Length: 158
Image 1 (cartoon, rainbow, N blue to C red):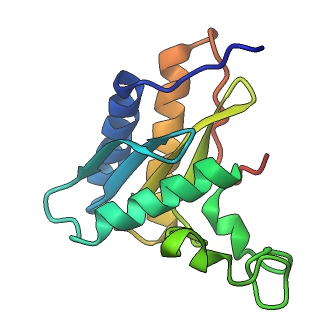
Image 2 (image 1 turned 135 degrees about the vertical axis):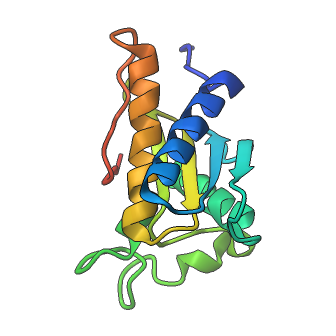
């Protein structure tokens, strides 16, 4: 048996606050979802002015990133993205009642080499969603300091 790290609400709140601060800075209305390692939401926060579709989309992205241990945009990245037509996972977005998101804005939360959750963002363009997601991951790393190592980057694939 091994012990595992579990993401807690306090850490989810810290990450969401960092993502929203970045969204404020770049002037975009985001919805942020932080999910646990099973893809279940720990927190969903929709900024004033954000789209009403944001919570579901952000959750789908967090679910996919946590469950498949990769940034969601990597599914459609040319030339070998597995969800592209002709590749091995083409059509995967119809899995889990359409919950599987294969576009930019979802990132696994990797702590000490293990996926402990996912973050999904909806509201900006790909560059904006990515900036807010990376800001959230960076905030978690800064929170932990040298105690734990958080993978802080846009392209994550384990």
